[in-house]
Picture 1 (tube, rainbow, N blue to C red):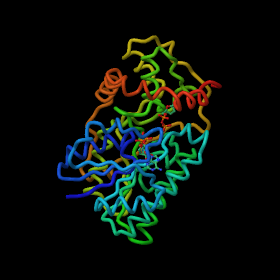
Picture 2: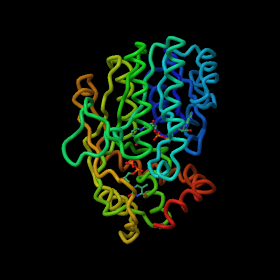
Picture 3: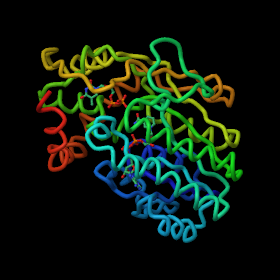
Length: 335
Ligand code: NAD
Ligand code: TYD
């Protein structure tokens, strides 16, 4: 039996990973450690609250004493770190929390994992650490050229994790995933923002010309890739995760209004994001060699996601108030 500490497990990918792991490995114990920032929600974990192999601890990854205490209390042998500030636009408005959580928080997890001699620290990174690529696809050995405070903080955190392998032999692995979508994604990210706005007949704010390209990975495929790397990845190595489902933002916005039977006039070009990365793309030869391949086509994942947001308005409607509206005004009114 393995005892996993899933940091950031109340967020979008983390909560989907917890669901996936409890089903796939019924003998594992999963302890979610999460600060419950605006993006972390216990509702995301409602389905597993009563599971005998699940527990929740509210805490900050920057709080070394609390991380240590939790690891000892639950006899943790493995950390999977999803905890991060994650939204590029918020990092442009206010980078402070990004540096704290994504860099310093990663350091804290490394330090405690080293001190307590954990079997593994798996760190969740992102394609954004490489920066944009107009053509072709990045391999794991390519250099980092992050452009936003979010991507730069993620790059700093990841490099610290790698340095703990090189310097101290800490058993780490890293995954760098592309844009992920699916149920429980906070409606600040483009896809859930567009879907929920369209359901309310509100404008879909498309940055710039809308021709930026993102690869689109369904969230259960992200979870299964992390599971494969946890079990079969080589220590000290990073693995790209991608879906080979490249789409422009404009294509996705059009697909959303069509799927919801709304007029295309809802799509409104607005002022571009500063330093907007034109395209991300990753080569996944290395991950495929571990036997992983994406299972969900974009058509399938897209339809499931639309259906989930239509059927779970009780999940996202309460989010779209208070702090969210304040952020929304700051981010969009001037645009
Ligand atoms: P999210 O914003 O939905 O969730 C982040 C979670 O981390 C929340 O539950 C939040 O409460 C928690 N958290 C934030 N600061 C914390 C702290 N200091 N201590 C403890 N918990 C804290 O994010 P997500 O989209 O699920 O992303 C999860 C991870 O995957 C992140 O590391 C992100 O960089 C990475 N990633 C995301 C994507 C994507 O498309 N969403 C793609 C590639 C990689
Ligand atoms: P986002 O979901 O924020 O992910 P990331 O910036 O990490 O790729 O944005 C996805 C794409 O959609 C990105 O090219 C920016 C664009 N976008 C918009 O056009 N309008 C929006 O309101 C948002 C939030 C994003």
